[in-house]
Amino acid sequence: MLARIKTNLKYGVKQGREWLQKWGTRRRRQIVSFLLIFLLSLTLTKVIWELVTEEIAIFGFHDIIDVTNTTQMPPQREKRHGDYTKQDLEELLEYLVKNNYWFLSTQDLYDYFIGSNTKPIPDSRKGQKRVMITVDDGYQNAHENILDLAIKLQEKYDRAIEIVWFVNPPFMGKLGKDIPSGLDRVSCEDFRAGLAAGFYDLQSHGANHTNLTELDSQKLEDDLSKSQQILRECTRDVDSDRIVANHIAYPFGAADDRVENAVKKYYFSGYNYSNQTLKGKLKNPYQIPRVSIHQNIPPQRLIRLAKGGWI
Ligand SMILES: [Zn+2]
Image (cartoon, rainbow, N blue to C red; front, side, top):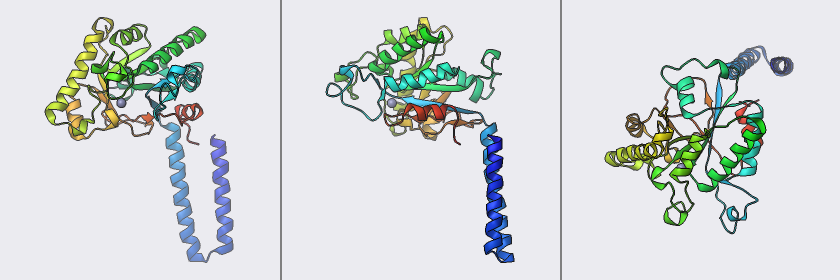
């Protein structure tokens, strides 16, 4: 890649020089030369920064639907913007597994990449590329399809993937007809099974899926503490390392200073939806960037993002 950059730079300088000889007076030539050098330096700095900076893509999915299952397709289930198909997800996950990606859990990201005292990366993980797959809200279809893919990939490649769930715990096990989203939610028992199998990392998405910035202080505290408490109670005997509900993803990605200050009392980190990848050292662990995924983003684009592709 460096050779390609060098060739492109050389070509740019040559073009610039030819243009100057043709069009410039002496004074104008000096100004244009200065601007040209300035722009080239900026480009070079950007190239070097991109090459040396650690980059981690954190994807945020919602419901996952199987196009071969009529109960998950129209007219039985209306399409939603945030849907992603099981078939496209399989293409992404299979690429990541085949290429030996480290599927980070929220605690991995915190311990090794963003906490105030990051730990050294374990030898077994050195050299591996990193990615985080997160799924919001806790929909039943997403659970069934993801678990099926996780088992299939493990059988085929002998590797376990880890998926981060950001859950609204009071909705666990509720039927779509009884809750605002209209979609069935995963039960506590099913989440426990996924956690015990090593495929799931269970974290909080607030209790009631409300925009936290719009809650008064008391309701905010209640929402944050209740979601943590219910999720931990559900998983206590299968969470020996006490990693459940240590982290939160803000509903709608919304958090301001007041929300962050309240969140700090209960959680080590918070995830937003800035549609950026995580680049370099993050200053604020309560604004971890996620890329929001919807049905119009092809898996090839996600693979490019996971590779840190920008060029
Ligand atoms: Zn959500």
